[in-house]
Length: 278
Image (tube, rainbow, N blue to C red; front, side, top):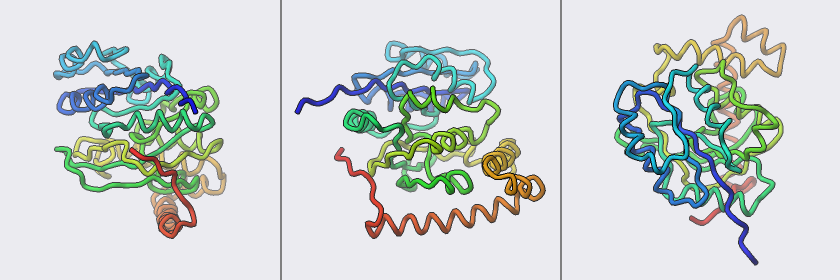
């Protein structure tokens, strides 16, 4: 049987003053040696050494720009608007792809042309890239909307057709723009889950995800969690508007219990993930 052609994959990297990690991120993309790669960097007007790093790899980058923007969501959307790939993804400038990740993704979409989005394993690392934890993906619409993340942005790849159906990132979101977007996609499609390491998520003090409730991002995070969790229920929205922290804590506890059940179902084979050889 003739192998179907690999799809073109567009990877967008938003960046702002991330020179410390940027070269490693770029190398993790360009060293994939994926034949149908379109790589873009959308820089928000960095004042550190980011531009000199980008120039070093310029011949491997399909498009890049450096100019002030309206934030991370805006930068990602700039790339998505220009994307010509069949599959789109974004990789933040402090994260990395695992070796052969794009080949795994491309092969899966080639073999499953009806797949609309896909998620694989993610490796959490410290600031120096040392692996702390591996997380396998699992999917539940309720966990995605009401709990902590069950899907993580660096290891998610989306069929570009989805952009036409559900739209781009909501640029009013600054903390959990990925989850809000995933919730919209999940209303139409269930993702394929593959038990393969695809990406590394770097956990460091300056990142939004690790900055905690005393950071400048916490206000955005809390407000956006309220918007996402209350989007489909007027009753829930009423409660969240009046006691957001308490209601979110309850939703988180329920989601945590559902996660436990999901893991047990996978463990005992009641539900399964796709298995792909590296």
